[in-house]
Image 1 (cartoon, rainbow, N blue to C red):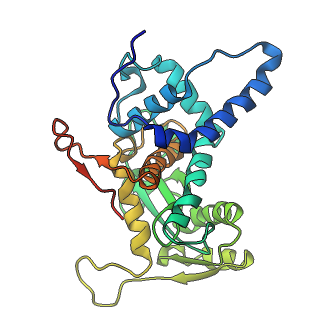
Image 2 (image 1 turned 180 degrees about the vertical axis):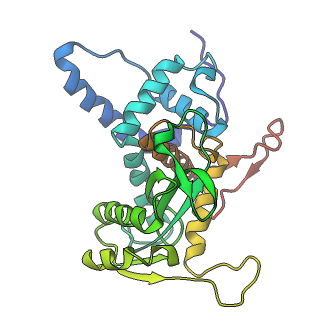
Length: 289
């Protein structure tokens, strides 16, 4: 069978080497669990991951995957399994440490910034998994993220839009503190004042509430919080996260991790993200930040 022509979203050899250990470990673990039922059907991990990146980058439905990828049902099955098992979060964490060291930081962060943003959903999202954001008067889901001070994703939590920021923030902070026990400082806006400050204190984390200066008008960057705002913009280079299409919140979280994994892998290998504005000329722009 002839080798297919690569797509712009495909993994390069250098980026494949960065994420392959996590995928290989996941496959070996699955083989061990299913050994009693016979050897599972083999698939090339790189082709599977390329297909997942294609969906995340272009935003197409699984059924619309080009035919030169593995069958869409197989790819969707791998995505669902890996999302439920937290594999994409593991890969994201695998890349974060060397990238921090490349930027001259310690491998583990000592502080983080958290924020939440509501996003509209598609018809594939069950009504029971949605809610109304009272502040923005929109129906959908809410993405709560924690980043470190240079904007790399530390944790993400997807809930119904009606969940209060402070409630989602406590669960998000628990997740970030468990994965990064060195965190001792967190910045947040006034929406987290109600529950987060007391909860963070029980974890030994100091909370600082940031706000715009009184009387400021128009766009005014808020110290520290600009990092998390920029992080929200980075996954928008991928079209799948632009709107929530996933049935389960864990899979909605996965598409965010996939987008950030692609961005971090490109930064580690000094590769550029191809712009969609002029695909014929393959114009390239550096990754923001």
